[in-house]
Amino acid sequence: MRFDPDTRRRVLLVSLFAVAFGFVESSVVVYLRSLYYPEGFTFPLKVISEAHIAVELAREGATIVMLVAVGWLAGATGWQRFGYFVVAFGIWDIFYYVWLKVVLDWPAALSDWDVLFLIPLPWISPVIAPVLISILMVVCGVLMILRIQQGRHFRPTLISWVLALAATVIAVYSFTYDVEATLRGGMPSPYPYGCLLVSLVLYTSAFVAACKEPRASCPTA
Image (cartoon, rainbow, N blue to C red; front, side, top):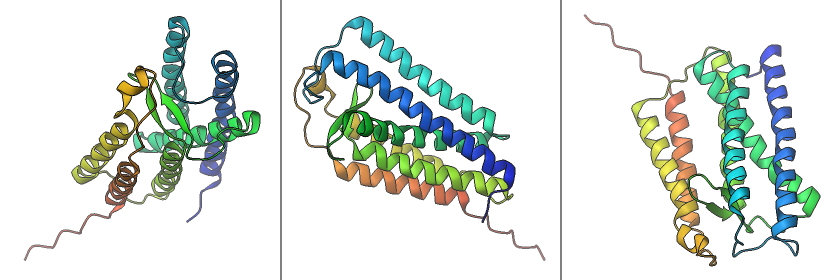
């Protein structure tokens, strides 16, 4: 299976945007950490000014808008646009950590904790959790784009939606289950890696179900 030249160019451009955008995102974090964690980022989290929190919330919302816009511009159909979006999101998130490693030599290990999002409450987890989800997003997004380009079947069924929704609920729970400790400035409880594994399996199953060719109807006598 190969991309046609136009699709290859679009995937490359979207990927380049995501890599560059990852650096923009990481540079903001570099400045924030120099203000609040001059000795190095670690938990428990420190109190950030309300003005900075408001800017961070707006920045996170703008980030999603930009990634959605890129997917919309790159694709021609609904699912193709979604495929480009998830590719952009996954690469952006992975390179966010790559650039932090280059600039700050952080994380020291994939088990280091990080703040993922602040909307609507802080999402926290070891770095490996968002990285694994992002890798899956990139793989599924590329395969989705490729299948649609080749005119092959991709149509989420009810089973796909149920599995994907369950995976999302479990993943979000794993990021927010100890939010009270985070908000109180405490240390987070051990991360539930079992939830991460289950969500990855469910996401994969939802994607496979969406790619499954429908059975041909039997001719009537």
